[in-house]
Image: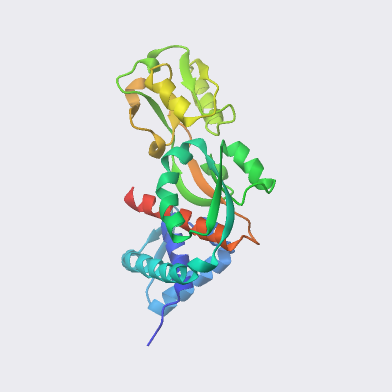
Length: 288
C-alpha cells in the first residue's frame, strides 16, 4: 500500500496555484530545482503526468486537475489536525504590516478565524504604504508584511495578482474633468508611478486632490465626486464604481500582493499567521 507524502502534495498545490515553479519555490523557501524534484517524485508515485510545461507556462493535465481537488482537502486536513494539536503551544506577538487598502478590505476575512484558533497570539498591526512597509520590514520593525508591488518585479512570496482599476462615484462625473482630479492613499502609494506614467502616455493632465494616508478619506473624497482613484478590484469599497472604457482612462500595470517573512528564524506565531494569510488568498483565487 502506497502512502502519499503531504509535503509533495503541498508543493504540487503551490505550483498549481501559481502556475510557476519559481513562485512556488519562493513560497516554500526552496530552490526551483528542489520543487521540480518533488513534482517528479509525486508523478512517479502516482504514475501520472500532472503538469504540462509549455512556452506559455505551466498547465495542469486532466490528472493534475483531479489531484488538485483531492490534494487541497488532504493538505487542509493535515494542517487542521496539526493546528488543533499545537494551538496551546503557539504564543507570542506578531508585528504585521498591511497596506491601507488591504487593511480595510482584506484583513477582516483573515484575522477572525486566526484569532479564534490561536488565542495566545497577539497581533500588532501597522498600516502604511507598501513602500513604507517594505522599509519597516527590511529594518526588522515588522515580523510579517503584506506588500503590493509591480508584478514584473515581485520579490516576496506571491499571494495573488491583480490589475488596478479606476474607481469613481456611482453616476459621478469627476472622471470627465481636466486636469483629472485624482486621490491616492499616500504620496508613496505604490500605484502612483504607474498612474503618472500611463496618464502621461494618454496625454491626460491630472492634479492631486487629497494628501492624507487613509482609505476612509479616499473613499469619502471619491464618494463626494471630487476625484477618482486607482484601486485593486478586490478593494473597491461599496458606493464606488469601477469606471469602464467609456471613461477613456488608461489601463494600469498588473500588481502582485506578496508576503514578506524572514527566510530563517521566524517564530511559530509568525509562521502560523503566514499560513493563515496564504490559505485566505488561496481561497480568494479559487473563487475568482
